[in-house]
Image (cartoon, rainbow, N blue to C red):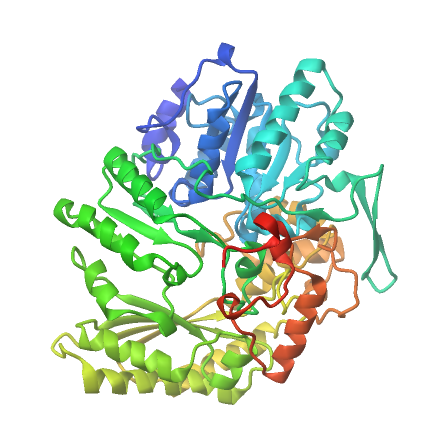
Length: 610
């Protein structure tokens, strides 16, 4: 650690964010490796160290003997100010080397509002922002994660994108880079060779042509690269790399616990959910492997909580025998087992009673919409009766705290649907009064509404987002209908979600806007303390770009910015689901029969686990 950094650390919040030295961090000798990777999470240490994907890929890269992967996180505002004041470049935690000294700079991107952090981290490192300004193989930037299924807003800054699950494709990219570095390739040769790796998208090898009205005319692939790049998946999760020896943070993080991934994908097909479509097909881990990994993680880390996580954890086929085995291990050691992502249609009181032996927590459900009509539109496949029956089961078992999540602005939503949220909440209060086993503590309902953001690779990818003014009108309509002191109602800010929609469905013209927004001070946009909508609006004005263009209704036959990417689900399937949504028709889940989405072509022997 530099003397300068040692002097700065006592002056900033949470200095442990910046020093490394944690148990299980990986330190190699520089002379023993040929490729050094700065693995960047474009947000704070607390969020990055809670990210399961980052932990997995950190281990995957460091398993390669010729590669050393080190971690880099975005600094908080006070540290950034000190860094700029003292000309201290951004560094990696393992041995505090500046990021600029690394061969490759990798970003994992899971949230659109972290885009400016990517640019800011490159600036703080002294690395040129634009890919075209970085000559040679040094500081080659690549990115993966949930957001890069529409890579175009970041196309000016990222040399190549890794689409889909990274356990295998990351090894292939690094192996190619190792060869290119040893043989002295030029950057252009490496990028063209990388484009031949399935799942790699090189934006400089695709030209976007626009119509006079600003819509895309066509996407032109160059030099024989594939017109469409299909994401990568891991076929056998039992054999996939999983880090049982994980870094133990030296300071508190957001999810300070061990995490187990039960399966990838989702059987449900909620029409607003990008993850539910992008992570198809369904692939599960076996209970034996999960139990082994759970015990190994807990033994090594000393954590007092473990979470069984997936998009819809209660849909795991072997959930009951798995939880019984893990509970038998956890209970005598006073380790809490938590199970998020529960659904109201398969809630089990017996299971929840087992899970809460160590610590009873609140219950969380996401009905998403207040009326059955609108739940059918979004294909939520849960009824009001199931929601109320689930609450009755929980209340009779002693639960008094419930979190409920809804969205405002869903396609076809009316004021009746908005007020239906309040009606459902009051029905839940009535159920509590009738069934609660412990009324002394009182009922607490935490009600939250989000501003609906249409996302690529969903049946709603074409729909218009309602205006911020209309969103706030619906917020106040709902707020006026809720009078109970048992309900704490909170809603997402309109400016942030509006910008999220712009970035989610944006094209390459947003690169200049982001660059200008950073110049105007945009950074840490996901944090209320730092988000400055005015900086973004000034940037749009300066670049002559109208953000409303990306929130409009897109034509069903329109060329979309992400049309050069495939997640395995066909465009025709998305169109059919959108048409069914407009008619209020539901689609059965995958366990009731294949719906022909197309993702099974990626699975083993052309089928999903389910």
